[in-house]
Image (cartoon, rainbow, N blue to C red):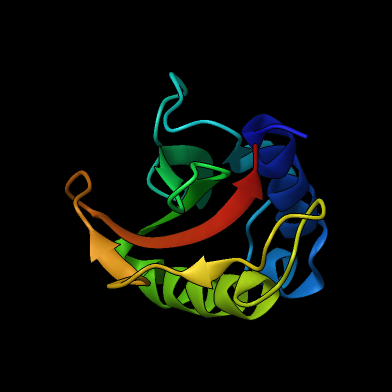
Length: 133
C-alpha cells in the first residue's frame, strides 16, 4: 500500500460518513488533492485530503512517518459545520488503523483554523502514522 492508497481510504470513509453528509459536505466537493481549479462559490462546503510530509523514523530507518491533512472549508456563515466536520474526522481517524498501518495520531495543534480566502472559514486536521518500509 502507498500513501495514495491511504488517502483514497480516508476519502472513501469521509465521503460515505452519515454525519459528514448530514452537515452538507458531498463527495463531489471533496478532493483527494490540496487544491482544485473549481470556482469557489459563496455556498460551497469543500474538503481537501492530501499527503503533507514524510520522514524516516527509528534508528534503522525501518519505518516511514506519513502525514495526511484534511482541510475543511465553509463560508463564514456556515463555519460551525466546518468545526463539527473536524470533530467528526477526529472521531473517525484518531487512534485508528487504516490499510494495516500503525494507528493514526492527531498532530498538534490540529484541529485548528487555517488561512483561507475572504468570506470563508477553514479548519485543518492533520494525522501522522507510521508505515513499514
